[in-house]
Amino acid sequence: MTKHQLKQDVIMLILAVFAALILGAILFSFTEGWSIIDSFYFVTMTATTVGYGDFTPTTAISKILTIFYALSIIPFVLYAFSFIARAQMQKVYKKIHHIERKQKIQEKEIDATEEKLKQQRSKIKKQDNEIDGQEAKIKKQLKDIKIQKKELEEYQKELAKQKRQLRKESKINKLQEGEITEHDKELEAVEKVMEKALKS
Image 1 (cartoon, helix red, strand yellow):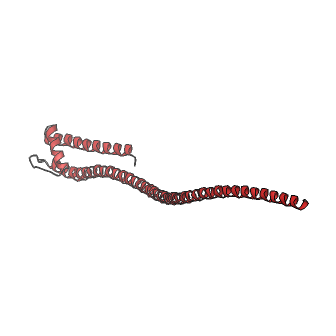
Image 2 (cartoon, one colour):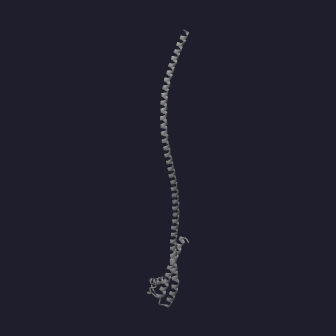
Image 3 (tube, rainbow, N blue to C red):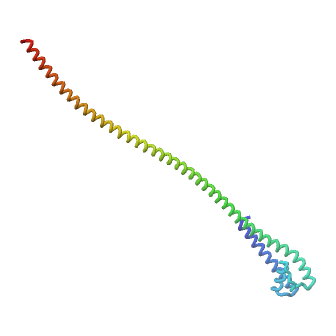
């Protein structure tokens, strides 16, 4: 049943109840001689099972009419009230169902968001581990660079020492070459003297 159709049924029931009350008021006004307002008051009290007793039927026709009217109007009014209450409850249930469905959708969205957050946290943790690994690698590389720098400095010092040694040896070699040259000259002079001596 659609909302529009339910609304139409409720309106039709209300109109039917009022029509039954008005018809009863006209009948009791005619049989008892009451005013329309008093008759409407009486049939309303009868239909709602209140019955204050300030108005009572006096003639046999009115009493018979009251019996049939009460047996017919009271169930009809109760049905109308129950139908309206059921319609209202159905409306409330629809709202509750809509809220529950919306809540389930929101819960699913929350679960999906939490899953995304979990994945992001896992990804961030993985990236942090990678960064820590890279930092450790960089530290090791810096340490290796320092060691290599020290080794290079020591190598440069050793190279400079060897250069100084070579220079020193080169000077010694030059001096030795000069001494050899002078010795050779002296030998040549001695040979010349000996040749002259032999000739003479």
